[in-house]
Image 1 (cartoon, rainbow, N blue to C red):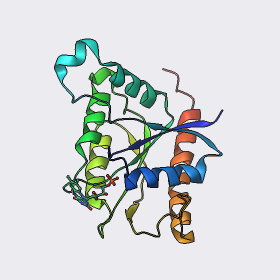
Image 2: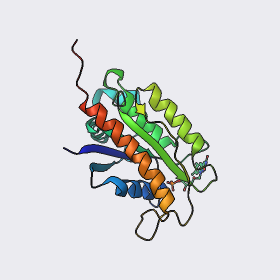
Image 3: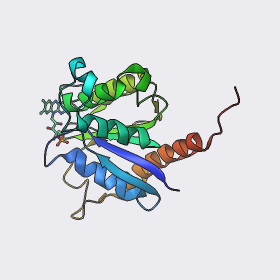
Length: 188
Ligand code: FNR
């Protein structure tokens, strides 16, 4: 049984550089995991009034997150924080509190932007949000400044040291997710 890796891209832009980065990251581990991209751009704006009858897109989203052994979030930074489309998805997943899908979920965070500090501030906000919700966010940092040579024509990492660095980051995610998913529950 392969680990189920759910990949969330924090951008709804059709030519998103973060979507491209996400696909390259999946490419590093796709032979070993069951990876799937989870759509967030079809979710309505969170509104507690909708809780009585959650929209179908919301139900699909929370079902897919809940089924995952590991989450990889690849996101841009908007005004030094988490893009609204991503925060909206996180909010849906966090409610109602007893069904919070982020609780106990092993997660890794990365992202890219053309700027020099490559989403570092947005990732700090995201780490805090997921931490509060009970996700187990792996240590380490992966801030990627998007340069034209980051990815080659096939969408793979163009540079060996970047590939090795991000490969190790992905290994860390899979290793922790593997340990958590195999851990037997303690007797009460
Ligand atoms: C940005 N961008 C940006 N970049 C950055 O490094 N730090 C920031 O705080 C912001 N803020 C910001 C706000 C808004 C509203 C937009 C639309 C853009 C630029 C951003 O990194 C760039 O648009 C990337 O291409 C976004 O990633 P995707 O959507 O291509 O994945």
